[in-house]
Image 1 (cartoon, one colour):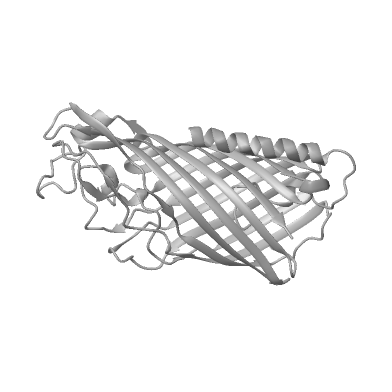
Image 2 (cartoon, rainbow, N blue to C red):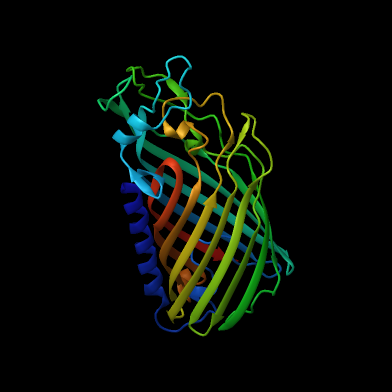
Length: 366
């Protein structure tokens, strides 16, 4: 929560600075809705010789558990859900550890360069910190709580590289009626760790160090294809767009598993009351498959250790603010923030449910 408040406060301070420098004469042919909402990646290409830097910070929270679309309590999980690893030494018949809350913070640094009008190259690196709170129940059966613990891995994640091809060309600066269609051919490189560990609390009271489950790892460990197709349009003060994207795993990683393929679709509308300001509303749908295979080092009476309890379907609604400096020290600098909540979740559970997310960012083309 403190990280999220810090990011929101920082974004607000940047926005106020931008507004202060955007009053008076407008000297640059830039508009706040030239770009998509900050949570949409790879939405535009550049003209030959242009270079752009971007910095995004993202905070996501999860709370509670679901099986399908139904909420389920920790007590129900530990008394009804079988433990996949039952029969192995020290493994009880039902789950005995339940995750209750999770927070993810991500910092993403990106760069784009257009060697020609026909293609823009993009690279993005990220650093992640994840926190998950757990409740451990006494060994055997029943609903007697032994205690709680938290795991908190942090490291660099996977690196994204892509080529963006503008199928409809790149609009000239200052155009108020535009149409863009951009194809992304991307690959995710396995630079993120897949062997993060943490100290846990077992049902018998032990505190060993173990490999954290799948969703707490920093990367996929696989090369992933990440194509996308984005349409973006503007008619005067109204903007709109849609994007379809995917993350397709090409093989198992070194531990013998692959995260599920991800398919996403999003659409948005925006309104620009002033050159330097636009407001957006967006809906996003996401479908993620279960983990294929299993890491033999990830084992325990907790749902997150079961590859079958991963993935599902989800729909989010999001609102955002985009700002751009039009003259002075912040001319051409873009600042944006977007906040969203899930409105539908159908999870391969028991699995933690999403609660809310926030993305704030800065962009500048040269």
